Length: 292
Ligand code: PMP
Figure 1 (tube, rainbow, N blue to C red):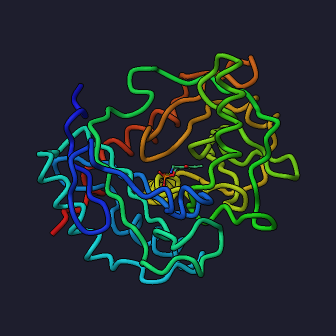
Figure 2: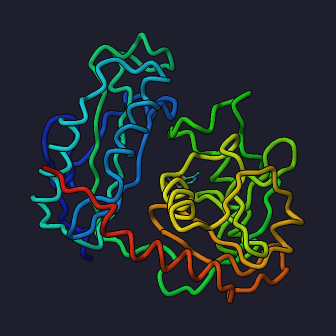
């Protein structure tokens, strides 16, 4: 197994996988009290690194973490981890920042007196859905939370509603759960954002009840740069089912066609969708940022 003897950075240094552990008193164990980012490594660097570090920072600030490590500290930790593992490609990094170890069990952040805990877990991983050709999804009864409950703009580790949506998809034998917001409009898949093509235009849900994905952001910018009409909108399930093309976006899967929603087929052959996927693949190397 290629990931069997990887080195993992925890708090201030690297540990072999067998010793890479956090305390049972850590806030992530005690209450899912942590924030995270998923990064992708190419030989040219890490895709949109600065944006990921900024989102991590903003999520931690929103949750009132104290002593958030600086971006340069995190960059250095990532560099050390990649170098120790000789990873330059086919690598996914799970960057986690927990509120840290508590002096006694409980949810109260005042019990965190030892500072936050950074985890850089780099693993050999191909893109999810690589070679799959397209994914099949079901709409989930699990709603994606909007800002009135737990702001979806915080990229936190409290992933249970997304996990429940994924369980529903698993039981149905599909790849992902499509989550609606509490008004019934499409929010996102359980782990990626959604876009649809209709005629000459591209649409994506407002980032009200979905993660404001960095890949989503890239696709919106690339469409604008290439003169493709792109709109954020309230979009219903019916609009997605009757779209000319649907695709999911995320760092782990980049752009993946959605070929089925609730048993209805969606065409995989759409010229505009193909054009956007090609523009994205042509741009990905330029979006990479070296660590130094
Ligand atoms: N939505 C959710 C719920 C996610 O967890 C992710 C991946 N972290 C995304 C969307 C995609 O975001 P990004 O493009 O920043 O990877």
